[in-house]
Each structure stands twice: as C-alpha cells, then as structure tokens.
Length: 113
Length: 112
Image (cartoon, rainbow over the protein chains, first blue to last red):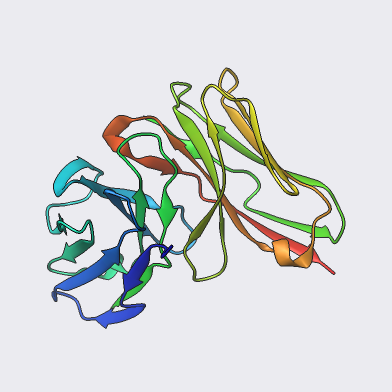
C-alpha cells in the first residue's frame, strides 16, 4: 500500500510568484487536508477537500486555493507569494470526512525569497 | 475556539528513562486526539489516536491517555531510546471545519 506522497520536496520562489504543490492520497482515501507548518510551530489547517469539493477552510486568505481530482489527488496553489509563506506544507489523507486518522505525507519545503 | 498547549517545549532525558509528555486543550467537545512524531524537516508520523469514548491507547512502548473533563492528554514512553529523539505533537479534532488543531510540539532528546 502506497502512503501519502508530495511533490516537489523543496521549492524556492521569489515574492510575488505563484506556486503549485501536489499530493497523492493514500490508496482508498477520499479526503485530503492541507496544513502549513512554520518553523518551530505546529501545523495550521489551510483547507480540506472531500470528493472534489472544499469541506472546511482555516484562516488563510483567498490567494491560497486548492483542487481535488477524481482520483483524489490534490493541488495547493498559492498566488502572490509573500515572505511569510515560507514553510513546510503538509498534505494529509483520511478514509472519510470526520474524526478519522489522518496520514501525513513528507511535506514540501517552500522558501520565498 | 480550540487551543492546544504542549509544555515544556523541549525535554532531555537519559536513555532508559520512562517519561510522560503532556498536552492540554481548551475545548472538551473533542472527537479524538492524535499523537504524532516528527523528525527534523520531515512529515508527521501518526503514533496513536484516542477516540473521545476511549481513555487510552497502547502501541508497543507508547501509551496515550485522554481525559476530556480535565482537558488533558498524556503520551507515556517506556524505556526511552536515542531513536525516540524527535518532536512529538498532539492534535485534537473537534469537527469544526473538519480540522486538526495542533500544539507546537515537544522536542525530545534521549541521551545515550
């Protein structure tokens, strides 16, 4: 069974650019959540997708957007990058919406210069 | 609004010691609480999940407890090993926005 995978591993962008991060869910999981983890902090919830629809959003501006595809893989898009967007971006999948165990991928380290 | 606190931020113990990591949360309307391990620069590995109807869960040398009434969870690590060195995070699920709310984590160092 393949776990959650994310690409790319590392990414360097400059302020004002746009970035797309990708996530493949664990097999059989239809729910994907995205989190942002700044250095020394716990992960902060960005949003969740369930069957291609957004199912909850944290306190992040609209320039953070996402997609979920029919195969349940997902993308996180960030427009107009700011220096504070530098963080580890984590994707988590679960079997269903609700209080189910979330399985995290290895993350994408984004650096904004 | 759920807030999760983990104190202290860092802990150093000698190998072989039994230890307890603490986690407190403000909203007792919690569906479950999950403990994770994070190695430097890596993703999160799920260790244990405790449902609100349960009081504890065990996996190998790890035991996690949940007391909703007091807003506390503990992770007990028996006979610690240098390989246990990592950051341990707890996260509560309250159903609001379907999200996990995380603490900042406790960085554990086990000295050989």
